Amino acid sequence: MRCLHSASRAEEEVADVTTDAEMSHNSPSAQSFAMTSGTRNNLESLAGTATVRDLSGERRVHRHLATQLDYLLTYGLSCATSLCGMIAFRLAHTNLGDIGFAEYALMRRVVAFLVPMLSMGMAVAITKKVARQVAEKRAVDSIETLGVGILVSLVGATILALGIFLAPRQVSLLLTGDHGQAHLVRPLVPLVSGSILAICAGTYCRGRMWIGASNSLQLLCLGVIPAVVLIWVHDIQTFLWWSGCAVCAVSGLAVVAVYLNQTSSATWPSWGTAYSLLQLGLPRVPGDLAYYGLFTVPAIAAAYNGGLQAGGDMAYAIAWLTLAGQLVAPISALLLPEASYLLHVGEAALLRRRVGKLVRYSLTLTTFLVAMLIYWGPEIITLHLGVCRSSQLHAVRLLLIAAIPLNLFLCLRSVIDAGESSAISPRLCLFAFATFCVALPSFWRMGLASPVVYAFVLAMSVLAVLAMVTTSQVFSKHLGTAGNRHGPTSAAPVGG
Image (cartoon, rainbow, N blue to C red; front, side):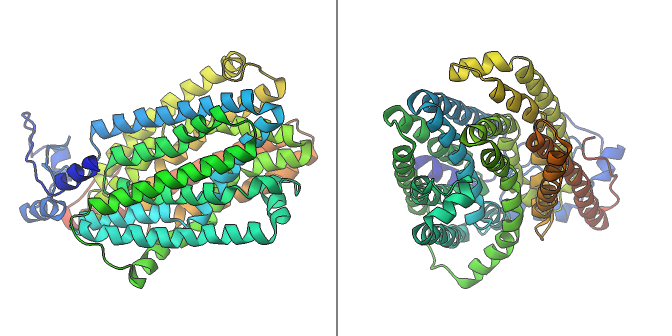
């Protein structure tokens, strides 16, 4: 709570920081980003920001941007979360047995699919709205956004609870491909509800740029709690109940800490705030369903065709894919409030340079990691699980190819979400999911050895290409608007 309080006070302070190096304002780069004195003063007063010189020589970097320490902290805690996830896999393989391990891997995918869908897009909606409120110096109003976001999100959890209570076998068939797994879907209610609450609290903190608090909550709920619970339990049903209760308790305490940190009294949730959040979040639900369905349906399809063991192998391979995505996902999470802020104040050129660096970094590092994991796959899987089966190795090696287009999409998704008022990136995910659904039966008829994997890689490649085209359109629109206000701007490719 002390960390939150100090961060909140820091938002009200202005630090005047300038570099010692002076650049000529007559240079082409300086002219292309020139602003009037009145505009610069408006930008600085708009956010209560610190100002430094950027590469173009203009004094205009804002306090609401993430610092190098924020990025390092995010990466450190994200790596710790991933490490806890890998430890949890090893503990599940040791304590739960082969069938229990397959159930654990599959239920991880099911939870990762349900939480974004049932939260009704609040993960992005809360972050965008809170970041805009900070940019407009209305940070005191953002606590109402959190309260309304929680109420809206828990409606989805209530629908899940009713569905499981009224038709557990049908829900089990839908989520696991087997109507006999009803005993596994009942404990999902507290686990999904607590995860939704954690998402609301974490994205609110991210919108306020309380990076340490946001990442610490993610580490506890996604990393520490599952690993610790797996030390003591020996069946998947007990694990789901205990981890669900623990996540509910931790996320509930986080929400209470945020509310106690407010210097002003919280206002009663209004219909206007709920409507604005639903406008931002609800159109994203079909796209979120498609995106996370891409990471869940392959495991369900494999389980439906080849049994629970095949589904577990596919879910385990997808876990390695999401691990590779952690190279970019933490930075992408920070980029959403940054992009919302910078586009809101007319700084599309600065955002484009930051995104270009991120794309080059992510593609280079992802390619290196994928090559390393493919080459040393047997040794790494044996080290991780104690044994390496050929079916697991085959699924992991093939699926890791999709990490390259996946990480490219993750780099660009935040810019698309911030730059478009309508839900564009979810539409891209819907198109990619449709590609998967069309390609899968076609590849099955062709007699390919791993049709699910090939369909998935194709869908991810299509998604990355669509994201590149859409991001270029976003920057063209916002750079054109900035050029009309501040003078001509030069355009460059996203990755340049």
